[in-house]
Length: 53
Image (cartoon, rainbow, N blue to C red; front, side, top):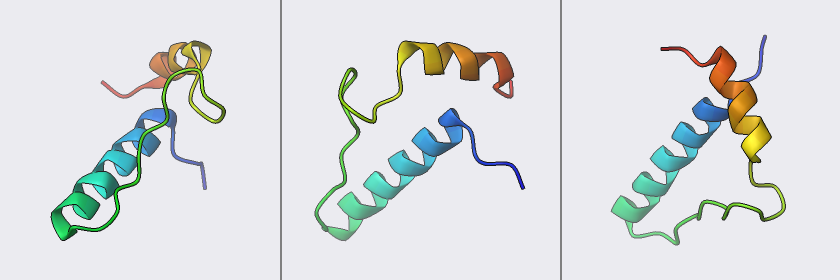
């Protein structure tokens, strides 16, 4: 079974954040560009080649 791609992971995290906000729970945050663990510009370029349109 293939793993989810970069855009699928970002979308899933945005949904989790919205759900947490609606429930009034502490909200998970997106990583800032350049921080450890955040996707790089190269990762976005690579995933754009295979993104579904």
